[in-house]
Length: 143
Image (tube, rainbow, N blue to C red; front, side, top):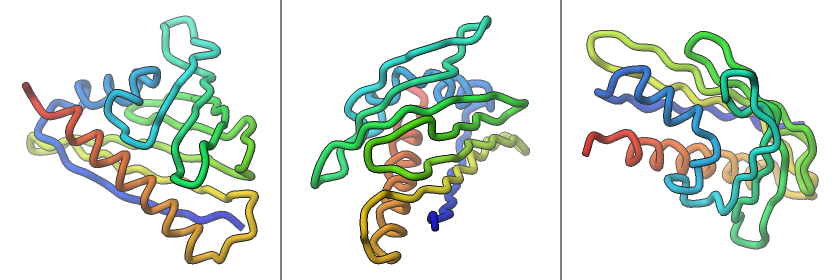
């Protein structure tokens, strides 16, 4: 069974500025410290990534996986296509904006194909969320 983990972060930047960062998937290694490589496999007719392969550092090894992306108003979703140590890695970024503040809610459902205690799986998922949101905050700060 996978771990469902959620987190959120607030920005003073316009919603579209934050959305542009999240939709520029091939640039994730520039601001997500655990992400080593992104290879875009396919884009849609407006240039958004629809399939991408990733390599991330999970301290003990490198994890490789491929995600399929879909887009809705103020939402970026993904589903696991394949992964060497993942059984599940589905999630979304959902953006909202009110009173000059943009909120990014990040949710993932993740399960690794390793015999690990549930608490370790949850901690790894929480670390992934924290790394991503911290990097996103750094990337979205105005120059």
